[in-house]
Image (cartoon, rainbow, N blue to C red; front, side, top):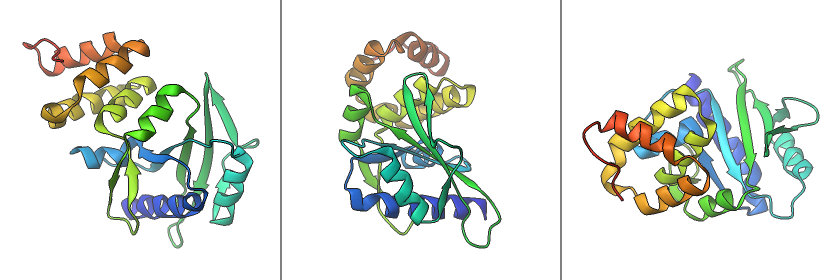
Amino acid sequence: MAANAVTDALNQVWAALAPFQLPMALMGGLALAVWKHPRNTRDVDILVDLRDLNPDDLVEAMTRAGMRPKRQPPVLLVGAQRIVQLLHEPPGTFLDIQIDVLLADSAYQKEALTHATPAKLNSQCEVAVLSCEDLIIHKLLAGRIIDRADVATLLRANRASLDLPYLKDWLGQLKLLADFETIWHETFPSEPVAG
């Protein structure tokens, strides 16, 4: 039931934002399944480049689609990252699904959106999903223990297809290369970081 509720929330979010024709991509726990790491999650995380759109317009469109802001004002600032947090209760579930819309304000985030790939996640619509490399970077940016574990699993499952030069370039620019190398050595103890 919870998995269906999360997928329903994703469909609602995507349908609400699609008319704006903004660069956007699924990230977070739902996106992991595309990269061979299905894991339970109870939220929807999307990266969106608003371009010239006001965040209030995005919130208004999502509110019309049945979501509600989690807080007022709806835009939360965490460090330099702007996040719009909303809640969605799929019909008949009595369960709030959190929706985090990260606003792509940095050059890296805008670049990541250009690498997104189309996918279907047991949903009614096709969505764009961050590349595995960009999902790894975002997981390292988040820095939680579960995110580091996700990075290790993504490395094991996708190692042969990773664009390591791209990954290492951005990790270096974002000062995350040491964290990545630590996880790499924990995942592949006897091997140097390739690429």
